[in-house]
Image (cartoon, rainbow, N blue to C red):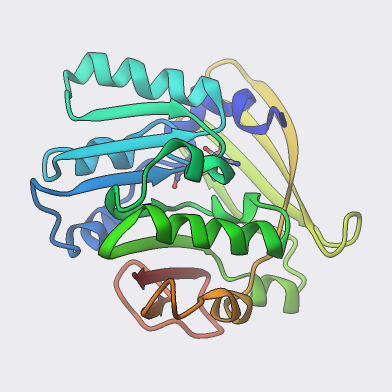
Length: 244
Ligand SMILES: C[S@@+](CC[C@H](N)C(=O)[O-])C[C@H]1O[C@@H](n2cnc3c(N)ncnc32)[C@H](O)[C@@H]1O
């Protein structure tokens, strides 16, 4: 397994804290205490904990055992009973969950592009539909890779706060058609620097539309931000809200 997330797990919440924009966006889905929710690629579980008071249950899965361990320790600290965390590969959800189990499945923060081929992503979208209940919703968010590919974007904006500096860049050439995502994390308290790299599939809206089999999803919507603006080519985010 790639150690990318393992090496930054302890610092994850300082790099990617849960944003108010995402909270407001998720709140609009009218979650109630009969809903079962799954967060795929849950990292340290912040989205899971945010949704738990509204839902019947929220489950988080992630491939990285260190991130799941942090999420589980938060569960103990916060005394939340209706959450559960498992180390699982998102490609295995069909073996782990049962048909119609969840009203909402989430896959946020660019998790989807860790599946490295069109076929794997297409299969995954079918598996998600299968574990959704009737009228259930799949909500995912990636970056706008059409724009990143067209503009050959190299640097992503620097993340610099009181705890860390996180530099991120894309290498477009070494593993074409995949992107290599190179990062460098500096921890301010210790001056430690952690360099890392992981390969991503630059998934575009057009491909997603082709994969959105109408037997699996009867409605597909795309947004360009968590404020609910309709997606266009200039936006940095690509958010999908697909209804079974
Ligand atoms: C960029 S992070 C996003 C995490 C979180 N959803 C967020 O928005 O902050 C991507 C996450 O996907 C997880 N991940 C990568 N490949 C995975 C896989 N095959 N199955 C499950 N999780 C995976 C990583 O461990 C990491 O926690």
